[in-house]
Image (cartoon, rainbow, N blue to C red; front, side):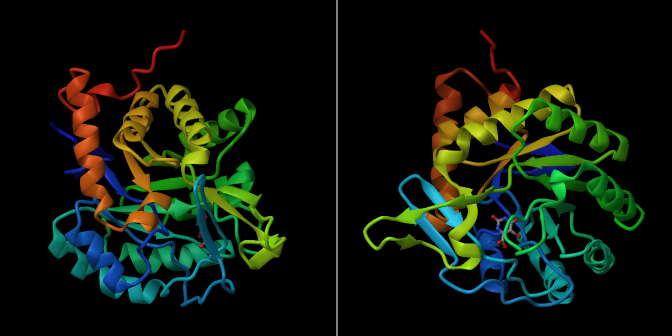
Amino acid sequence: MDLSATLAGVHFANCVMNAAGALCVTRDELEALGRSRSGAIVTKSMTPAFRDGNPSPRYHSFPGGSINSMGLPNLGSPTYAVLIPGLRQFGKPVMASIAGLEPADFLDVAHVITEVRPDLIEVNLSCPNIPGKPQIGYDVEASRSLLQRLNGVITVPMGVKLPPYFDPAHHEAMADMLREIGVAFVSVINSVGNGLVVDPERECTVIKPKGGFGGLGGSMIKPVALANVRAFWKLFDGRVPIIGTGGIVSGMDVFEHGLCGASAVQIGTVLVDEGVGVFERLERELGEVLARKGYRSFAECRGRLREL
Ligand code: RRO
């Protein structure tokens, strides 16, 4: 079964890769992704300098999914610029996720990372966990201004990682702006920001930062993720490739993202829960689903969701 994907001119032997943030901060983690069946090596979102992130506990997984408030812990872009050339030995695309607390941070990181030419750059407009810093992706004009400036610096395919939107007017406004900018791909969704998980026995929050508020991931967010994949697929008429992220636990979940319009997918919570062996399981399960349904490739099912 052909589970490959081509996106912004970049070929992925496997359409399933890690989501930025999941097991991709350190050199060891990035190299483990390189050795795994992940279709790409996606880095943790990086800032101009090393960050410890928020105080622990800051990640909690439970049967329905996960909540996190990591707070952008990362090695800093100069260190990733040294690591990225070495990651090429694994023969798969390297995607650098870039972030910042201010627009100037994104530009600084973009300058440093463009120099080492990752295959793609994903601009993270949607970190929900920095106290006092709203998600840029919820402000169309701030996003436009930042992306215009980054377009002048980044010379590899540039995509955006967006937060979930819950209203068609918001999908339309964002899609109009992204069409004008000419992004190479759209990655949806980041975690569902500022949820609250409670431990009723201990009568407390399960994570420490921000009074227990954090980004939700895992199976409980799948319908929100699918809605965002589908909304952008329709608004772009299938002409801007979409990476679907959110709620993938099984090969069938990957198939659902494909039906809604995803060209490739990323996994977060399930990767943290199971480790890099999960890529092999998902590959096997997706291959079985596609074969049973008479498809010859993952690409063939893309966007084919029937509307009743
Ligand atoms: O580091 C984080 O707290 C974090 C980031 Br940058 C992000 O984009 N999404 C998320 O759920 N956590």
